[in-house]
Length: 71
Image (cartoon, rainbow, N blue to C red; front, side):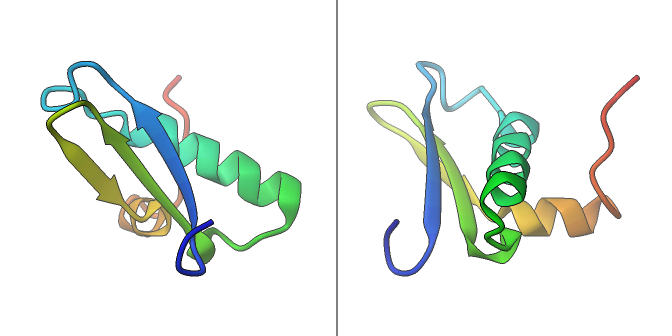
């Protein structure tokens, strides 16, 4: 927890080319559901030794009109 946000961080050796947005969004959705903490309070990021990328999982869910698993 930092600055009032719950951060979910994931080390990815190839962070520049990896895009684990769906994976991290699922983690945030699961933690939100298990803890009862609103998704609004989560922030996700992936990184390596040179790069750092972050996003708000709530924005991903709203952009997609809800999160659906691929069949």
